[in-house]
Image (cartoon, rainbow, N blue to C red; front, side, top):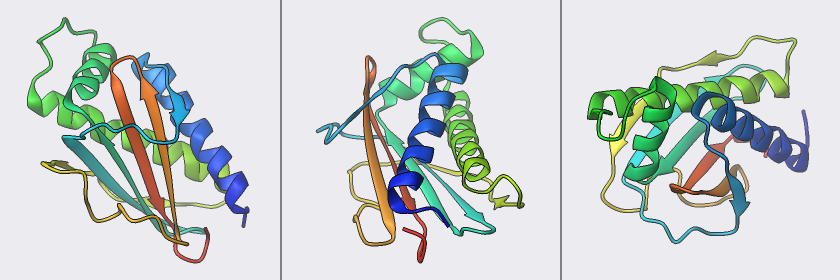
Length: 153
């Protein structure tokens, strides 16, 4: 299994590729965002590596991503479209990541869960020995991706 530095690089590459290609959103890594997130999606994966991944972001960024992906005008992205878009974003990031980790074996992904959040804390917030937290800034706001993979990070 890859070391933590290699895993971080693979996850960052997956995030950059998905955000740029599917959503036309360019991001840069930052230490902290100070952003209040209102939207969160979570997916679980199993295979040669088992864990979970979560993405959190402000509503403005989620609306921009949905509009960009679906070629909508400002204000046309409805709440259900935004939820589906963010779940698909996480599904693509996770799928791309696990293919980079081990392209020769099968991984199983769950259907992503979506939730509106009222505060920053959540199930995967605490950085631990088995988690990785990456924060990014975009022109429409910041977002973070948390990944847990016990025994692998």
